[in-house]
Image 1 (spheres, rainbow, N blue to C red):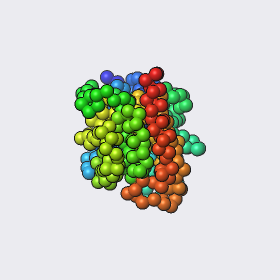
Image 2 (image 1 turned 90 degrees about the vertical axis):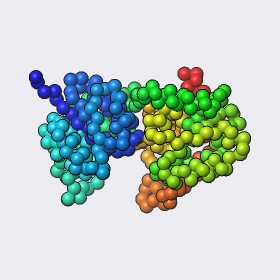
Image 3 (image 1 turned 60 degrees about the vertical axis):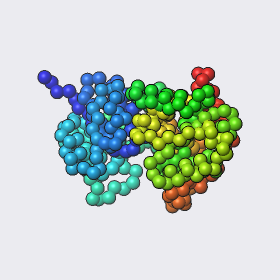
Image 4 (image 1 turned 180 degrees about the vertical axis):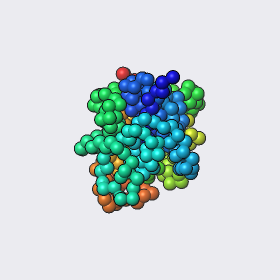
Length: 353
């Protein structure tokens, strides 16, 4: 039996990056229906692609077991490896797989002489300037090595789609009906981030929630796992009036997929540049996302009802000017009243559409 061609994509990044990988996997499968497609992602993100509809085989990279992870992934022996990460780890995987074609973008900065990235690849593609959205970057790389032939500017090609198991959807609906009876709309507010410089300042968050309450909206505050995130959310909750507090529920999910189930039951997402933001857009929710310490041109959510509120950030130009455990100074420019109005308008647009 003739062996099918085998392609390996490497994306050793975070949960949001894995969600943004879906358009790439979809385009690759459509262009290569007979190809055996594999993807290497962090082991903690495997659940996001386990039920993918594109017949992609998913492999996890475990930072606690790098040698075992390297051995397993390299044993795939692909014909083509495409590095979508640009790190020494991903370059080592590409080299160790022994693929005939090993593709990566040209480095933006000079690579140190000792880095495996200097000699791991035999096809390097110039990165478009100015750098486009990360999904466009990925698709352009695949186009350049003729694995795909897609229009990188087509919104229907670029928008991620997230397949969520029905159990998680039901769990989210149950949470909504348990805590909100006739309240509409329901806003999923994820106001913190693993990188707290992206977090929405507490005093602004309080003003927005108070305003939403006056319009009859309910708010679900999702709490991140770190102590800094918990303290930030606790400060917001304690600063709310008793009336507004009655329309706010908090949730600390056991898993990211459980949070996605709750997101799917809401009417609109509001908050920081985080993985839940990308999950909300991929699930079809309207999204209002505030960008300061991250480049919206590369990382903005992709969806039908998306509003990006951008604030010029000196931290994007070295040196960093803000404390790591506090929201970025640039985000203090968020207009609370405008934010509340945009949230309500987005929810109304979706209901009309």
